[in-house]
Length: 197
Length: 307
Image 1 (tube, chains in turn green, blue):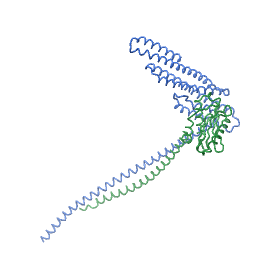
Image 2 (cartoon, chains in turn blue, cyan):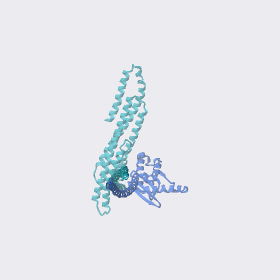
Image 3 (cartoon, chains in turn green, orange):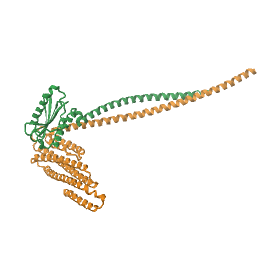
Image 4 (cartoon, chains in turn purple, yellow):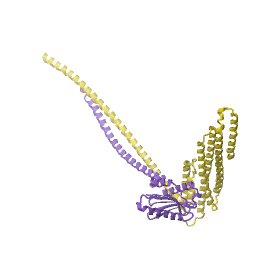
């Protein structure tokens, strides 16, 4: 499950303009990286142009999935990942970065022209969200709950074994009790019988 | 009125210090107050100006917030003016973040200045008051957003009722949208508890809600994920109950085992006592046996000797 690209594009005056983006292309060989990154940016632009404002879309294409979230202010966030990446996590990431971008840069700075905006947290995010299980709280909670359930199942099995052993012990202690009673009775008999002298 | 009280205080403070400096102008020690007073007067002017700026912006933002509240309260079905509301929301959010930055800059400025303790206290009080006002505005903003989301859901439910034609997805959608407010409004108070600090716009969750008012599927998917988590937790609760029951049954078994082992111990002790008694009897008997046998031998010898 990989994240390949996170970007925020302006899509209000078409054509779409990429304002800030970060790519993680370590899975491709060195020579493939440039064409792949161009392809990603181009596709991100096309997808951002086609999204309706105020909606989210997930588009599957060849071996990649494009998650796009268009805002009514005229920009769209795009996350490109492979097919296995869970959509909820991608969209949660999209909402978060688009909100951060909007609070950090009011509309006036990027509405016109070709601004180049820096957002260093994106690099941190793309690293962190490579493993969606750790990054997204809902998935992590689900995973921890599943682990807990497994541990509890093992516990119940051990408790069942313990029950068997305890039953064993009960039987043995029953037998022991009978034997000791016989022993006592015989000892008593020994004493009372031979009152010879 | 808070604005005017800010400025009033500053001029009052000016007159007070002027009077104090005039009274203590004779003393050499207090003459020192005169020279550095020029500088703090200048700095305090700067501080007062910035504080007044921030106060003014806060009042304008409050005015915008009131307009937004008015807009959000309208419950008409179609004449909603979402564009204006969205714009206002956006602008207010920008203002809040800007004001927060200004106030923190002002606070740093205050800390960097070397004032006498009373001016420092006054500046700190002013900064705290501005922060409090900003928090009030943010709280009001959040409430307005909550009202707005509730109205959106209500209006959507009403539209579903009116436009209920041949729609096979109608009922599930309306049930989803009825459930999603449960989940979303349940989410927001929890999140808002953490986010209600004085840092910036604490309304990220609310605004996300606002923006996604049109798409129920994402929220519904998150709702389902949360439902799954709830179900897992309920299962875990059941498992814990079963575990407790099994351990309780085993406790009874253990009590039986305890009882039996006590019996065994008693019996074995009794047997040991008896055996000891026997042994003592037998060993003491030997003494007696020897004595009696010796007595018999003597009698026998006597008989033999006599006859």
